[in-house]
Image (cartoon, rainbow, N blue to C red; front, side, top):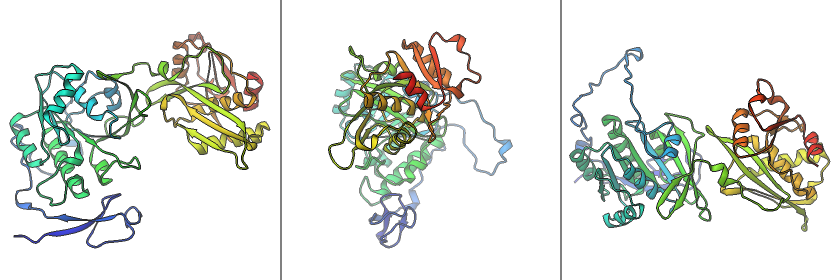
Length: 457
């Protein structure tokens, strides 16, 4: 019997140490080291995928210019939102990690995508649910697929034996935290188990050219559970997020080796599964009968997609000594910067006011082009005067009170026109090269914050 070995791992970044350390030398976190048993049987460890496909790959050093790149066609799924987020479809041989809160709909979404892909053989591996539970969910989705196979197993050895028999064209693993390798003695979900299981799936994907989706859990801090190396190993990291109180879910790209990282897919959760939202601007702008103060519409861009979102602000007299600053879906420090600009350049006394700001629809926006809409919503609430109807805003605000140009202004204007807006306020510096003749919407150019105030109020 071989000697049982143990090591200490940082639960934050996965750094391995022979002894316990108070501070991790890799990421600098304190008190994150946990002890785990590592007993590896190296003799039979490697899965041999050489006979999986007929073409055997000879291992040798090769010059970069001698590498041939065959044109690989992506697998285009019936889900347009997923195709957009992945950069145009599923790349053969890619490994994708999807993380999100419990109950957000990760399993439902990828069960639905697997059932919709009727031209290829799908293997859905579940370590969390029984066959009956998955069948009940599939019945609820009302999609039939004879090429969809289930495997409720957690051992990688058994999983790869079944894969060799079935020879699927896409593998979905739900979830990577429940999978365990027989070559590591620690329990499923531990750092060494997650790392070893993920590396086995990564080797499988690269050697067989079969795409793999790994569904993952997140910690209470919102980070992906397991070592940070898990995110480095995979090709694509997707975050599935949303508010439980809203029906809408957002699939956001955090890392993508085959496309952009600013893409966004929006889904609506219903009793029949996830429905892709083709025009999210319509759901992010609430329909109101009355004109209300403190509401402005911003023309923003997420990835390649223009969006119109509603910014709500409330400015009230401060009751306590220190004024409150509360934001939802926007950066608090960015709002404090805009308040300082209004205080200094416009003479508005926000220092004695409580300020509350909300991005409607549960979105989190990082695009600086919504600065102008935030600023106008704050002024509207401060003066208690509604902004003009069917007017939207696109501009970044500088510290000296100037309105700066934003990129891809034509797409923003076209989206506003499509949704029936009559006016859009943009930066004066965006006019260069802009052809206003092709738009039926009135484009108003402003250079400074005080000009905007004079125009609106």
